[in-house]
Image (cartoon, rainbow, N blue to C red; front, side, top):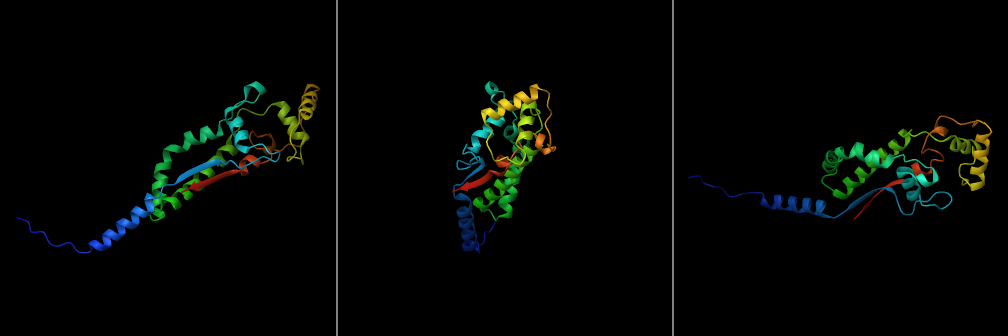
Length: 185
């Protein structure tokens, strides 16, 4: 026969478990990407620009550059372990851990945008970027596109572009700078 003694410290354990429950039971949602209020300089929603870049718009000659989809595919398998680490580091505070995860995922998204280099920009897009050096905040107009097409047709080469200026997804930097993470509780 095994004799069982009285359990001591039960009040501390109970308080600890209540505190733990309070920390992890608050519902929270993490959103990472381009929030509803993010706009391009011309007022276009950045989320729409990002979606067009990610999925393409073949009807108007924009090929897909799946930066968002690729970032998710590359990184999602590591997110549970990273979240577990964030929870541990934040003493099981789910909201704080999600805020940390938001920073991690937003950084991964920024990285993927800067790494994306395929498909390369069209000669007309390169010409338009060349024409807009120093004026990146000005929207591209139909007249500018027509002029860019005419210059390419005449055999002109874009001038003054750096390596960054010739990269897909990186023009004015607006989309890259509009990436946010938000925890809603």
